[in-house]
Image 1 (cartoon, helix red, strand yellow):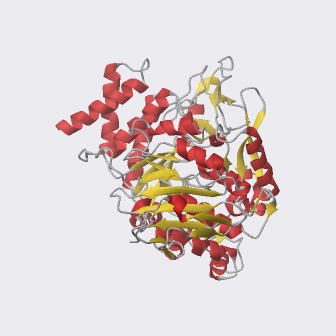
Image 2: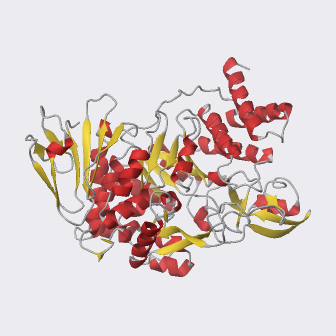
Amino acid sequence: MTFRQRQFEQRVTHHLAIIYAGILDDEQCQELAAQLLESMLKGDAVRQPTPHKSRWDERDAVLICYGDSVNKTQAHEPHTLPTEPPLYTLKQFLDTYTEGAINSVHILPFYPYSSDEGFAVMNYVQVNEALGSWQHINDISKDYRLMADLVINHCSSKSLWFSNFIANVAPGKGYFKTANISDNLDDVVRPRTSELLNKVRTAAGEQHVWCTFSHDQVDFDFANPQVLREFVAIIRFYLDNGVRLFRLDAVAFLWKVPGTSCINLPQTHEVVRLLRTLIEHVQPQAIIITETNIPNEQNLSYFGNANEAHCIYNFSLPPLLLHTLTTGDCTALKKWMMRMPPAQDGTAYFNFIASHDGIGLRPAEGLLDTVQINALVACMQRFGAKVSWRTQNDGTLAPYEINIALFDALQGAQQGPDNFSVARFLCAHAIMFALEGIPGVYIHSLTGTENDYERFNNTQHNRAINRHRWHWHDLEAKLADPHSHHQKVHRGMLNLLKIRGKQKAFHPNATQFTLHLGQEIFGFWRQSADRQQSIFCLFNISNQPQTLSLEDLNLVNTQPWCDLLSDIVYKDMSTCLSMRPYQAIWLTNTTT
C-alpha cells in the first residue's frame, strides 16, 4: 500500500468511526474501510484532489430534464410509442436547441422505477428500457457533463432488495429501516401527509417499515454497513459510465433515530463527507450536489467547512423570486441576499427557479411571513397552480409546495394576468443567471412550457402539471414560429446564457454585493477575481416604468459603461436610466 493509499484509508476509517459510533468497533471500521476502498478504487491509483479548487466557471450551465422530456413519434400521432429511444432524441435536442449555451445536463432518474416518475428506483444499475441504454447515456456524457441522481434515502417497494427483505434473504435482508409503533416518532419531520410507517409481513414476522415519502418508497437503514457498501459500488459504476455530478436526492432524511427530528442528523452530514472523500480521490473533477429542500439555514449547513457538498441547491431562490416579481417589491429578496454567505472556493450555490418538482415553501420559512406565503399561494392558485401539503408536528396541514409551470407562474402579478409574461419570465432568469452560483435551467423553462392539465388529470399527481412531455414535431414547430411565446422565451434564454458565459464577473465564485435602490429596482454588483471586470446587475421587478440615475451606482467615470443586454454605451454618469417594466440591465466596464 502506498503512502497516499494509507492516508486515504485512514480518512475513510475516521469517517466510519464517527458514523458507526456505538455500532462498529475500531477493527470493524478498518475492515469496512478496506472493503469500501477496494470497491471504489477497483485497482486504480488514488488521486489527490486539490482543496478549495473550483470545478466550474462562468461557462457552466445545467439543463434539467427527464430522459423522455422530448420524444419523436409518427407525425401527427403524439400518443404513439417513440420511433427512437428518447435518450437519443434528448441528445439531438441538446445538440440542436442549446447552441453551446449549456454544457451540462441533469437527466432525472433514468432507471427502472415503480412510481414518483423515477424516484422509486427498482434497479440502480440498469437504464429504463423505455428510455434507451447505457450507450445512450455514455454518448451524452461525451459531449455534456452528466448529472445523475443517487436516490440514496429510499428505493421502490417493488425492487429485488425489498422483495428479499420480505423473504429475509440477502441482498436486502436488513437493508430497510424499521420501527416499533411504540417508538417516539412525534418529532419526525416529513414532507408528506401519508403514514410514516407501513406494516408488512415478512419471513421474520410482521414489521413496520419507514416510508418518509410514500409507501412505495421504502427508506434504507444506513446503520447497516452493507447498505453503504452497496451505494459505494453504485457510485463507482456511475463514474465508470460518465457521471460527473452526483445529486444526492433527499439526503437530509438519510439517518433516523426515534425521539429526534430524523432530519439533518450528525451521521447524515458525516455520510456526505465520506462520499465526498471517496469520490474525489477517484475522480477529482466529480461534484456532489445535495438536494435538501429545507429551511435556508439548515440547507447552508451542507457545505460543512468546504468538506461536504461541493454545491447545494439554492432552494430559497424560487419562492423569493416569485414573491418579488408578483408583488413588485424586492425587500425580502434583498434581505435574504445580504444574509447569504459567499460560498468558499471549492463550493458553489446551485441556482434554479424551476425544476421537475414544484416551488418549495419550506425554504421560504423565516424569509417570508405567513401572510406573504399565503398571498403567494393564492396568487399561484389563480394562475392554475395545485398545492401540495405536509403535516406539521401539531397535526395541522401547511402548504409545502406550489405545483405550476414557471411560465404560467409568471403570467402576471398579484393584480392578475397581464401582457408582461415574457418580459417577467426573462427578467427572473436574468436575475438567476447573474447571481453568484451555477445556473440550472429546467427544460420547460428553456421552452416556455405551460401547465399540462391533461397530464395532471391523467395521473392526479400535482407535480405532473409541470412535467410535460414534448413531441419533437410540436416543439420544433413552436420554436420556429416567430409569433410563439415559446420561440421568444427560447431565444431570450439562450441569448442571456451566451452573454453570461463570456463574463469573468459571472464566475460562480466572483464577488457579489447587494445594492440598495428601492423596492422596485433590484440590484447587485459582481466583480471578477482579477478585479478587471465589474457588472452592475439592475432589474425593474415591477409592472411600472422606473428611473435610476447612474450617479446612484457610484460608477468609475473614467471609462464608458456598456449594457451587455442592449449594447447601449453610457459615457455620461449623470444619465438617468429609464427602465421598462421587468427590464434587465447588465452594466459592465469591459466586454470580452
